[in-house]
Image 1: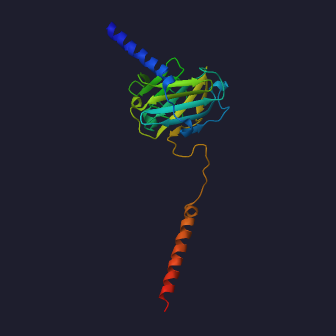
Image 2: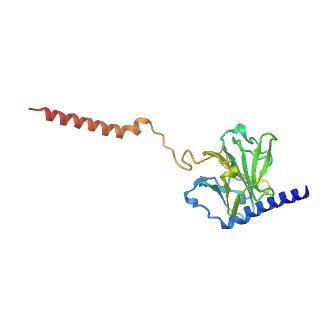
Image 3: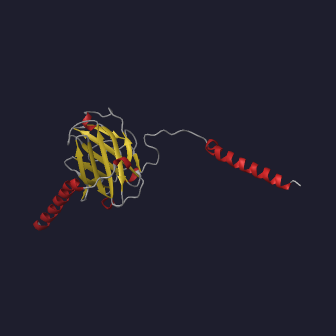
Length: 231
C-alpha cells in the first residue's frame, strides 16, 4: 500500500513538474491570429493587478491556448480561473456560484476549470455525481509575466471537445475579482463579431445590387432579341 501511495505521489509530482517547467519550451501561437475578447478596464473590484484588458483563445489539432492580459501588477500577483462549458448546456456543469471559489459563473454550466497561480492550480473536472470539482492529471502548461498569463491545455485531457464552446475568465487578487465577460459568457470560435459593430440591414438592401444587375441583363437580352427579329 505504501509503494502504491509513493508511486501515485510521484506521478502527481512529475505531472506538475512537467506542466510548469515545459512552459519555457513551448512554441506559443501567434496571438494576433487568435480570437480576441476585449474587457473593459476599471471594472474590477480591487487592484489593477486583477483588471483584465483582453483575452485570447485559439487552438490547433492537439491543444487549446488561452492568454489574459492585465492593466498592471507584477508576476504572480493574481490567480486566473478559466471555465469551459464544452457542451454549452448550463444544466450539465457547475453553475450559479462556483462550488469551490463561490464566484458567480453567470449563465455558464462549466464542465472544466483551469486554475493558474492558485494553491490548487491545474485542470479540474466537474463531477455531477458528487457535485464537486475533481482534480485531473494533465499536461496543462503555462507562462506568465507582469501583465499577462498564457497557458495551453491538451484537447484529449478535455475529452476532445467539439467546437464551439463557451468560456468564462475570472481573475482575482486577495478576494477582489474581475470577470471577462462581465455578464454571460464568451463563445469560441466567435459566432459573431467581437468588439465590432453590427449594422442593421434588410434583405432588400442586401439583394438590391444583384436585382439591379439581373434586371439589366434581362433588359439587354430582350433588346438584343428584338433587334435580331427585325426584317
